[in-house]
Image (cartoon, rainbow, N blue to C red; front, top):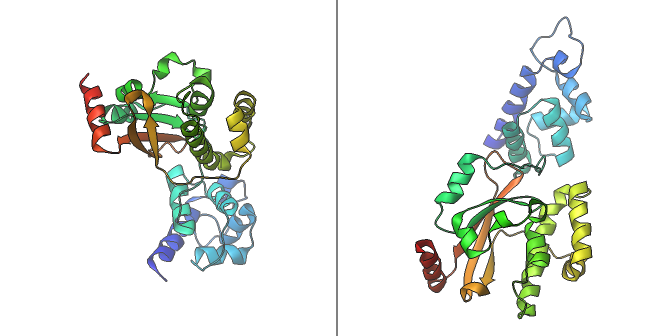
Length: 271
């Protein structure tokens, strides 16, 4: 058994041992040789066969869906970190976000983006902007002056601002890119009422969004080139990250792409 399979086996056994039958609504058996739940208990509560769960706990090569992992996580009462660990061991990827409605940015995260020497914002998976640093305010816009209900980056870029009024090709390229990226962020939340409401509103307010949303283009990569005409064509490259402990948030960091752009950002910092 390789190291990953051994870790998975030991992890599932230890989690199963710490959950008592009473914790999950099962009667306590008089004579249990080992503490915690039996494999049969986990299998029944997770809706899988005992054989299949045994194979999973033994680290065998079987297909495991995200839905089944979620049920096992719930049955074993895993913490958010333990759930992430289980998905990493089984599917070699982060666990799907449980929710996107994180409405607060921790002081530590705000201090982190404030300490960066480049523009940065924090937004939800629905692209509602929650926080920004001083350079983001200087380079892009003062988010504090935008009503909270309209402080959505898609709405800002496609509806409320005319950033590229004389450059329709540049605007269309930007719109195509951000809508394709939003489609990826939307996919885990398909059917969520707040996402669906935003999409409906954007379709009514932006012909560009309506046209491009009906395409199937997606952008899963985390960087793109942003050309900002108000700074004389400064070129920024952005990447986004999910901060530790806040799976519903995205930190978007914009870095100068070339020496000319870097010099302009440095001048803004000094202003």
